[in-house]
Length: 95
Length: 478
Image (cartoon, rainbow over all chains, first blue to last red; front, side, top):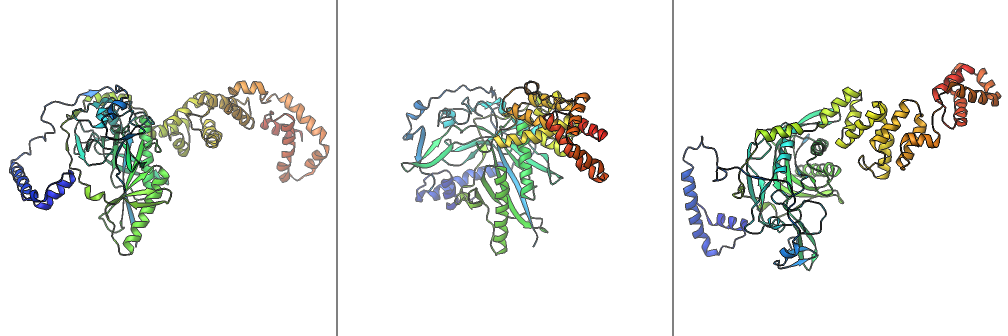
């Protein structure tokens, strides 16, 4: 499985990671080797195996539908870089 | 060229729980910004989601109501994308193994019924809200809505017109409201519709490229947005262009859809099972529990109204449009004892008054008990249908029950033949010329002429004389 530079750039963008230009090639090689391992595993016949969604052999515990949280906005916003009128402020997302 | 429209809908129904899907924060609408945003809603490191039992129960209710397969073992997955109102960088949703599998609903358009397939319905958390007003050049984020439980209901591309799409959306709306799992408020965003729209030549079997329409907050806009988009796509293709797969926003003010550019490139969500959540198993006990508590669904109730109360299909349809309306009718009718008359009053005077005053069946000052009490007095001939309008008006204005109003205003219908006869005699005696004219008139004119005398008698009795008896007595005496 070959993973070229443009693949690396694409997934780096999706993950919002800045990959220095010189490293993309080497990363592509590393990622290809990981995918080679996956390709190798895919050759095993798993048609009778149920897909595993979680390593624990347990099922999800459920919570009662009750409001247990109180308003702690002041406390939570004390660590936020910018707030106004109770809102968290972030760099503008539309132009 | 003969074009055909192909539509599939994705409906997000906000589940009417008290707390969020994965935390104990409140879901109440309209709170001050971020006062209902707990650590889980904020996506703080180290917190763990714990699934709300009620959310699972509501999804099973929906699945059961549309006769769907249930995902007895369903799995939550992470849908990854970046946006400031999604603090974790992923939305917890369901992908390969949703809680509700294939099902279907019946719709009816212009008297023709059609089955629309529901591909799936899955649980997910809502994102927060971005406020793009100017905060010193920044965007404000309110995370109260983050983590609110949603049931996303995905249809098959089975609809062929905007009308069918609206009928389907209304049907789903009716079902979730009957089940009590969603308040259905489209303005507040508790029930949102996205439409996938494409066009193709009628003789082609393959679907065209679709556009996804968002930002539609009423059924009326759903129909308009689809119709606009269909026109746009046909014009585009006929002038040699190509439809591109994209998300388009509907602008109700301009009545058009607009491309929401740039989003497409990032449309790679890299779903994977969420390691923070274990698979959800639905036991037989949970299903039995839901089934035993399931209310009568609208289609069944409509059929029962038709057969039990001998109502027309159209009346039965109107009266079962919402569960509240159907309950109102049944309560009123139980008191009135005349289904047709009760139905007419609800769909006539009551609906008109509600429209006029901006009330609905729940906030109507004339309750089912009040209306039923009044209709009973029409049915047993205590008051005439004409005077009942005055009684209704008085009830609407809070003047008490029909019986109290009839008593207080002396509206009781006069059915005593002797009393009516006395009035009739008086009217005839004081209008000798008209009596003479009537008697000399040809038979085919008499029917019309008798109206004068009826009017005089009614006037003299202040509208209280029983009109049938008045007519009969006049005919005898003239």
